[in-house]
Image 1 (cartoon, rainbow, N blue to C red):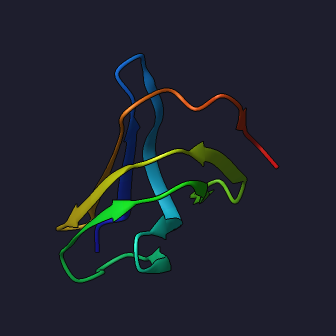
Image 2: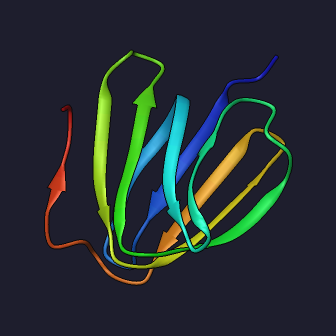
Length: 91
């Protein structure tokens, strides 16, 4: 089976690009988690924190103002309208 692969992209730079074990995002209808083999989904994101547990076991967190997430075939892409003010990584 393929790993879940995640890209977090802003207009300024790519914040994350690699395989992950888990992605938790602040969806418009509430927080939700993506794991490997998740059903295809597209959702808007609201202000909150994006939590990523990498395949290396490290917990990464990124601030999100707003954006969109798309996931299909074990490939998730998060597009954010602007670079977050602060990003906490490796928490």
